[in-house]
Image (cartoon, rainbow, N blue to C red; front, side, top):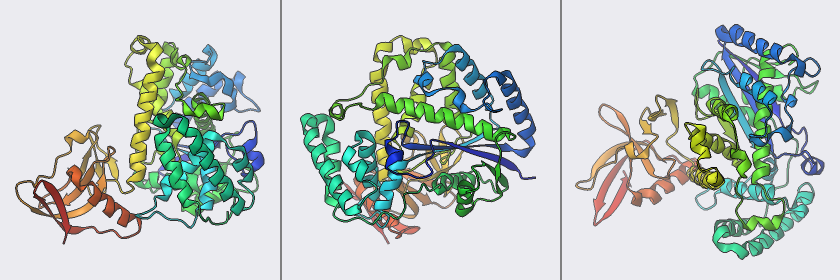
Length: 498
């Protein structure tokens, strides 16, 4: 028997991505996969409780299974605020099944980003071009604006597609000039994209590649130091594409199962379905129905915050499942374009900030504005992390105050608690193991000292030095570990690799 058992299911999958797929009425850009797991010794108790849950709601089964489809998309139009009492009770009982013994991994991947990645498959990050940022901006623009000509040409001759993309970005820049203060960043980004779109690679495939769902899970297992496990995947027919993808990534003990007889698969299905429906509801609420509306900001409707105590409790429970317990860097995984996932996680964090419901209702008319500000800050932090590709890599979550990076140094969640590297009065020679950035974009350095390994904040005027070294690392030229002399002369900081 394996030490851990994991179960996989998915939502919003597309066996083949083509024009019909992307223009269908029920099309949604994000592909969602969920893996739930636990120690083998805990499985019988967890599945017994799940069986009791299903027995309580057996009247809602379809073809012998209690599936996520028992809750319809329209019933989550305003998130949990639009749920009726029966669905509140069902979700409350379901979410209560998850405890500290349950391991959760989920991935949310943009299908449009997958296609864009085929165009730029031979283009890599360099000191001069950040291809991740470029692919993010292109995917975001196509998902947001849905330009008809580009979407129709997405699967035709790539030379024509480049022309269509250029035309779209030129037109959008002109439209955005109607509100330069709000769209300044987008204008700058689209201008850079136009400079890049001189030549692209041929699209090699538009079949959905399931590998990406398991890339993050493999990293999650490594982070959790789990090597003895089994992975059961919901059987999809003769093709076995999903199971084969897991094996290609290097996962072990992979098998297919029938959800009718495997409770773990049904448990994963319910969570995948719930995540995808909330993602779609948030996307719809924050998405403009007409292209010309995009020059204005979009605020979440007040109805999203008009909830009762039971609905408030559901948000707390879902936060504790997707964000809080068994936390890990790779618990939630996405591609470069991750706006919808960021929106969901940010919304859960926003709701969880209120200790009591009355605190939110005290100023309910302004909660949409407050959430908009909170979400913008979250996206800004994401942009900074995407730009700085070599972070300090938190690995072991030791407390709510700090994590340990791969070198074993403490990286504090509150940057103000991170010690500064002091060298203003005299130069110091350090054995530097790595350089990176905090979530706030502050340069950090991990240093091996005589009796310990520590992470320090660097002065702001060493940002360019750190960015340069990150760029070299992205191109495969890692300069560390190395001896570095830090000094301060005439009001400026210097770092010299010896």
